[in-house]
Length: 444
Image 1 (cartoon, helix red, strand yellow):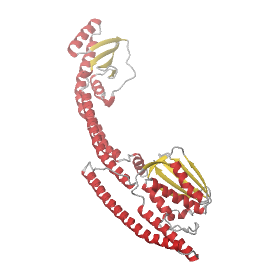
Image 2 (cartoon, one colour; image 1 turned 180 degrees about the horizontal axis):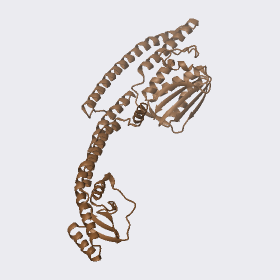
Image 3 (cartoon, rainbow, N blue to C red; image 1 turned 30 degrees about the vertical axis):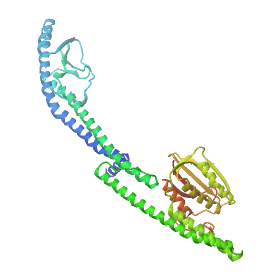
């Protein structure tokens, strides 16, 4: 038994609603349902049974009187006189069935409302009897075994049962459903405020413009106002960082441009060529640093066809000498920041071209309604236990991948930052081609 209780608890926990709306509804509906059952049970088991007991006791007494009167004078004249008196004074219809037998099957009404009648007839009548309260909506069919057959008595239903009980059930049920409907509307309104807050936070995390106004309960409004305050602080920080990066970019590129001009005017030589290479590498490193810090956050979202985008980024890898194959679903599109996603894909494709000779690009729709892009190469790959380490900014897995002369360890970090900024993700896997597979997922 001690083992069954935790198991039952786990089953109920798995089957319980997971949403706030479902749980809130359950918190309200379950007590109301239990209250309804308890009130109905108490009413039927005590008060209504007590009322019905008085009614059925009177009916059973009249039936006993009718049975005794028939047994005393079973002649047609006596039966006629008994029928007239029973119909006029007691509102009972009597039918004699000479040679008849009592039915063997009984039909019992719901909620045990036949108990009082069964008890009353057993107390007042010594002969075998049978009754049915379900066959006729407004009457009760009672049959008593007499000497020459069966005496059948048809009595109005309100003589045996209190019909007001059905009105009580109806009105209690009606009020319950009305209160539940009001509760559902109120809960739905509160949950909608939380859902809008979650949507606004998700949209802000993806860099989309949002128009959010807190409403709902006090706590929900407070959470919304805190979110807006946080959003404004983050936006100010991003704007300040963007301004700083623009100034740094301008300040660094000006001396670099002067150095490039001086080297271009200098006489050719080994030292000049070496300085030009160092200068080009420095310029490339500055571009990657600025791209990583900037994150392409200010770009607007646009609907972009994935196939042509993959074809465009594959041209750079083809120029680098790699054999590139592109396979994309026709008409596949996603809402992205074009420049940011293009930069991320270019980083991934050029990284594959730097370490492999054959590259396969594929893009397909996912069952969940998103877009999945895979990039496979036949290079040396990365050990699976170091997949997550490869995303570390400025990390260089030189022993696993060939040294990239121009790279500074930001390509994968930038690509994952872009993917997650769109609400997607970037993962590394082992490629069927023997190298590395990069799996990029994006919402549509």
